[in-house]
Image (cartoon, rainbow, N blue to C red; front, top):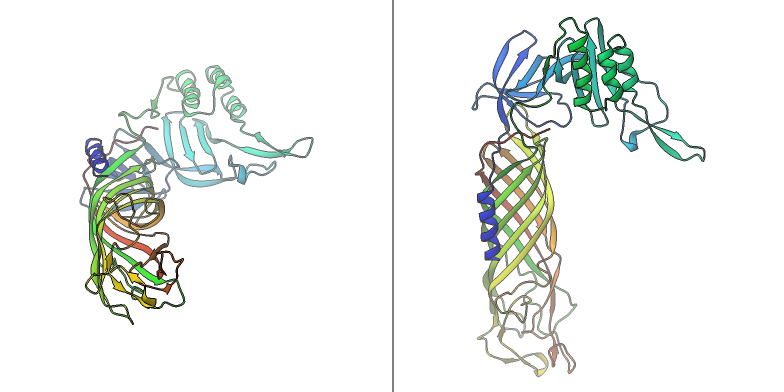
Length: 470
């Protein structure tokens, strides 16, 4: 396990990439004020409904909606303009939302639209959860909407079939009917940004008043990544618990371990983490490797014929977690709340394990049977003296977490519980028998569930983020 931790540590430290949320940009307000500073690049898959801006790295963050801005741009990146457009929100491609033939329902709406081509005939884009919409206009005519659309229709046997109802080619053919260059481009154009841009560029270059190609923003001026790695170190404290509860109704020598918590104290925890942030920067694949101590030593009170005793149970837990995190900005700040879940694999190496009653010498127990006075404690994994742990430890178990991220720091709380484990105290007598589990007596049985709570603080070691490529 130590070799695995060292190997993964080296991989993390040698693959750290750049990661930040804000980058240089500008925005223009409705009052025609140009503000230069930093815009939070959320690497939008769906068109944003708001934008977060700060005029300096340490300044407060202000959020703007489309009613407050004329446009905003990322330096060397994407360009959005506030426009009043005819938007059909009923257009859908998701199977669960499809309906039968339905007339378009366009309504004027002020939105941030992404500018793909700017000129006499511009091309704008709006991406919603159910469809991609493009908007085109020309000097003497307003915007028309081209949108994906699927419908449900019954076939001859009454079964549901899905029909592509996107008629963008016929719309563009009519719209540019007086421009042969544009109509020729329409004939082979697919419903993609590059092909539709070729149509409007054909009009701009051949039929517009300026008759020249215009600015295109399809390709960013610098290369971007669709993912970013946020990785670093973490440290904190683990609170864990393992309480034994008796299983049997009665015992000749009582249940001296009933209610005993052999792990009830805080333990330091440390390790490495990595978040692979996806395009929107709101979702991440999370992984971490941690190590912490576990267990304690203590005394056991005498009970009936069973003398007082002592126990020691201490070790180290190695944990690997893999899951997902979802981030939500908090108000006008750079802080982000996140929630997460996933699976955790724990490997426990118990280095000290002992239980002793009295002076540790063999004794005569209830019913006159001979009982050892000392032995190992808590389900030793027999046959491998270097690894002693609970039965079943090593399986993957779910965890839940909540946390807060700001700048380079991440605080998190996570909790999980192991399945219940059984334990027999073979140093005590529940009931003498010639056929007992120890040869002369039954041993008292206990169950216990190991649960833990981690409180950690992470510090990001990675640098600036390379923006994603669309």
